[in-house]
Image (cartoon, rainbow, N blue to C red; front, side, top):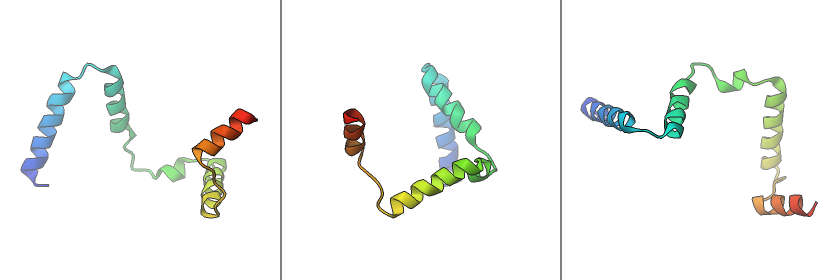
Length: 78
C-alpha cells in the first residue's frame, strides 16, 4: 500500500470513527487500540495456563476432540 493509500485509509477511518455513536463499537475499537503490546502474550500467561493450552493442543493433535454438536448432546444428556 502506498503512502497516499495509507493516508487515505487513515482519513476514512478517522471520519468513520467520528461519526460513530455505538458505544459497543467504540469500546471494541478502544480494546484493539490498547491491546497492542510489545510483549509476547505467551510470556504473560501463568504456568498453569500454558500447561492447559499445551494439553489442548496435544489432544487436538492426537484426535481427542469432539464436535460442538457432540459436546452439547453429551452435556444435555448428562
